[in-house]
Length: 362
Image (cartoon, helix red, strand yellow):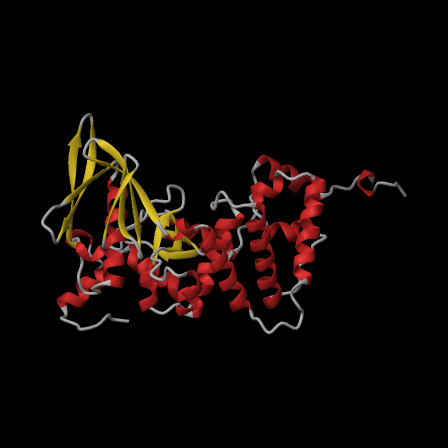
């Protein structure tokens, strides 16, 4: 009998013919039901990235779809209450441009569901958020930490955050195998870890293992406690994480606009800064303005003292992102039923106003 059964004379093996036909493109592999669903979903949907989940949320697209609706659907995926969904917003994955609640996402676009409005500014009072909100905020900041979006952290700060995230993981899952680079790498900033040589990686593991031993195995602290420790440590070291800033023009001079819940509106120009409160705002206008050779968008901030502030931004998305940020903080901290910009008023607020409701509709 021949050693190679395919060399037997007079026998034709269909497998080889099929392989040749596959290479020639005559036969195409059959798609699974899941692949068919994914293909059909990509045609008229908005893909929403959720932190802490590998699955992508597909929201059916239509002309009446709004960013506010997408936020509510994403919040429902994490059982976040409807009222708490106002703390979140969506931005485009590539450009990181925020969408106003009234804006319709582009068909087939990819957006990211992010916690945006940090109404609790004290890092040690974060437990005032509901548990689902706190869990998502941890997943968001942990993802930012791993993918290098949080810069200028010292080695000690990185080491502490790595240890806390491993402790949090061990409370909910099997203990981390520090001898495996694949498992250990999921808790370390990727780009920073790639820059370490073998000796430095081994030293890092030894330091992490030594710090983990300081925490007793029978500790009563739960995973929520470690999430709070992670968030508090990160915000204490990097307070700008809860501050959103924009580059704009104030007159003929460039300036930086920073918005936060505790400081309100801070405009830094020529190394001098001006700060005023959110409650000083009465309304906001946004319009197109031609400045020089390019078209800019002007945001007019009208204040109670009668002196408006004019800020020029390059694109409409930037201008609407700034206005939606100010409007969101104003409604969350000062007056929920008052919108600062009529053109960008959230659809839910329009519904409340038209129906003369005295509270948010869940």
